[in-house]
Image (cartoon, rainbow, N blue to C red; front, side, top):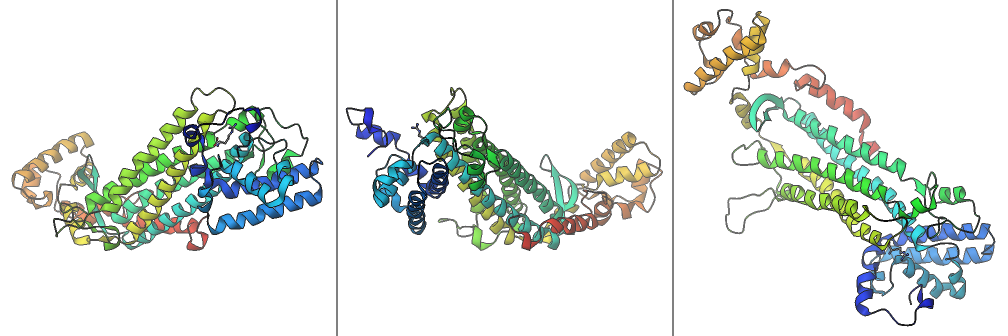
Length: 463
Ligand code: ARG
């Protein structure tokens, strides 16, 4: 039976019920709804709506319901209840009889769903933070192992300057750390409790809302009832953090797909995260990375859904807002799955150091070094840049690397060039020279990894 039948003379159509009911989606809020209901029963007792014995009976029945749901969370999908709030109330009434009908006193599904969803957001943020942390640790392990493995660095997907594979890993550690900090920031703002705001105008039962908020683990009560029941900022913020996070995972996936290609051959992905072709036996496809890249689309889609859903809604609650759950549940499920898959991919990477080195040696990525060499000999940089351009052109004509020009050829380009030029054109020299904070020199990468381990010790998983 619906919670609101009294003022109706006719029944809703089957078609409308199927359209309106949200249980198939919001059943996932069962535990949060039960938790919120127990807290509400305590609040009702403090204002004399429930006796202590009644409150205890209700809380006991709800606790039992919670463990039943825990055993089989999807069993409740068999019910034709309108939504998770109706389902929990129905089950309570089944268990304790008419007493259960007192629980909804002074409460509305509007403050209830807002509270349930915030509780879910808080728990989900913890889950994502721990997945991010585990991905960071996987990257740090590879960064530590490959801190000195030369990798061609690219701009415009053209070989630009050498970096190391460890340095590449550490770039994504930075991104993942920012993703975690965005979530923590969102967590601060969502920490106010809507319960006790009623349908929109507040509750007529004068309980201590601060105590109620704290009993549910919130920092404080939400301060305006109209806002509290219709605020979904936190859902949008999470989807936004997820979108930026997925953009990072997608870029990482794209880098790896390229590194893994036959053309580059820089890495080999583990058999655990690749698949074969039904037709071409030689193939080993980077499906995991392609799916991560592809799934970023649905997370961006969720953000657009949520922003568009909220825009233009008059205060306070509107049924449009029921659409928030499908979007945020899917976005967060997707983000978690992609983070965990990224960890698996990273853990299984084999780097082919001879190939990465060979590629870094090609492509004239030491051209900047020759310019810097000339600068050190007193040639202004702009002039040096031009001279090196000519040197590169000459080398390209012979299909040879820069360092294969003879000293006479170099001297013809600029008389200041001496025999020591060859030393500064070596791969090692061009890497080692970038030994300032944030640079790609192996010594610098090694230090960066050690510094990160300080805040990402394996024992701190999930911090
Ligand atoms: N299923 C609803 C939702 O997710 C719960 C709130 C319903 N409130 C109402 N006044 N009909 O938004």
